[in-house]
Length: 344
Image (cartoon, rainbow, N blue to C red):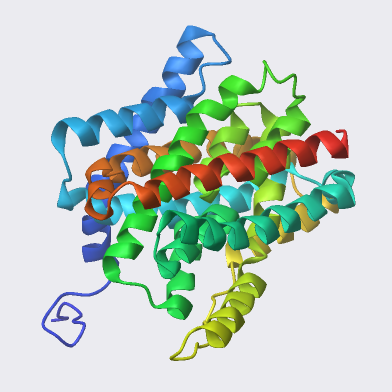
């Protein structure tokens, strides 16, 4: 009689136990997403973005019930693998012609926002009395890709654990605020869907925040925002290397080299773009992606709201929070000026 597989420590392994751990949080996120999409469709109000609804429901749930550890594995799965899968299949909605149509100006803008935000974080951090390690974490998280950049950066700057926690909380809070506010500003600022998508993709921190905010502007904005955000994600490795050189040069104990993982979801997204550009992808697959992407993104954003702990900001005082807010405003301003100069 076959036994249950073990991980060598007496714990069951295999897909069954893993799915049972993921199920509570994942089902809550998907339920919130379904309700959010249903509310938008039932109301007939296109501006009632299911991504924003899911975010607000998630934040309200967390505030009312606090952290529920049983949900954590599913939330982590929704924020990372589920979102990345959504981004990959979003590639079925973008052709190479559309990507190239963004032009070299959009790619240059991605380089500028990263190249300015990270050094500005270190400089402003000194003025505000924020430890250099925490300032670097906030700069990389703001400039590139949120939590992933913070974790990778910490391999170089070796900040304290509480600094990493603080940086993650600040990035989540500031990016979440941007996720809510940017869609409200698109109209007053007179941005076209393409321009708004580029602005969101160049401004917001986490992939889920940037793509979610861009999605509020419609399909064209979602596509341009995703491409812009992925351009910033691709800059993670060179930025980490540059920061490692800076640490090695300036720190008394010397620096190290960061082992940066390849952002494969970005590579796969571009692979999907190349595939659909051949014209060989069936129309039913493209239509299915248009149905699935908003649902999966809403689930990811719901998980983000359920994971946000505003109390974590109190541990290190207000100066790092002020730095995070200043950097968020700076990158949004740079991105807006850049989009205006590009003239799309």
